[in-house]
Length: 340
Image (cartoon, rainbow, N blue to C red; front, side, top):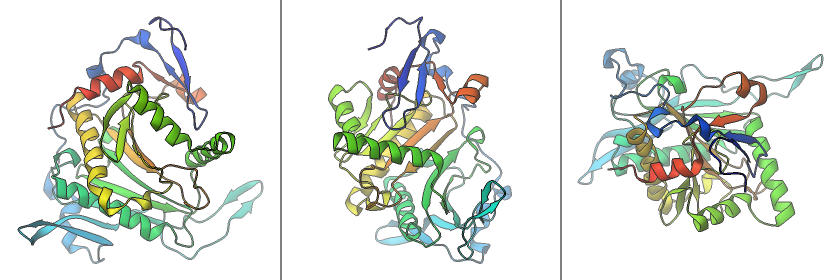
């Protein structure tokens, strides 16, 4: 155990990736001072300027549509998934990688979709239980539909909240990108998980979850099937990870019976950030094994990264994040935040 003196920073290493982070308690920031771009009121924009409000005029049929039901009758859609009008990856015939001198390149073949929530001014913490379940179900169904396509190596589901987190439109929406390569960060995580499995014969994420549930100090919330905690080597202050308690390599393995528990766990943690940190900008994404048979050692999870700091020269030059609050203190603070 490193020193506990508050005037000396502490280096922590991530068990999976091997990345180092710095916990610099001497900076002494209070929890409410962390949010970058926090707003006392909801971010709003005129509905007349929102491209998602003319969804009914779009010619393409939604990939999925889930309706909100009352008394057994539909009262209209609550979430739809449609193609992104400005895709980073596009549908096209699969092609092989090619070379230009020493460099490797390929066409950006894949898919880029948008999950649109119906209400222009209601964000994820504002949804009712059915709407939240519909959103997570839509994530899973589109993931399942694309993960085995010929050109697809990896499918990422993610959500940007706030301009500082990359949300170009205030209307609440999430995105999915299916791409022909496995992202570097995921590749390192997969290699780290595989290495731990070969050395110890068990899943590294299961090992972490069991330890965190035993010591409790970084646990924020848990239910029968999921646990939310601040990682030991958090990349940013107030980072939250949500993991299934049982071993599941792939997000597509999320069962119907667990949708409500997963949806509630995600919503509660986003509500904690909004209420506790004054509605900070944040990103969340789902990390998953691209192939559950080949990567059975992996364990899917949701990462929530609030914008609590800005990269400067040290972070850019080293890739090492500096946090001014210990994950244990962040968890203790978030546990006390009301979610109702």
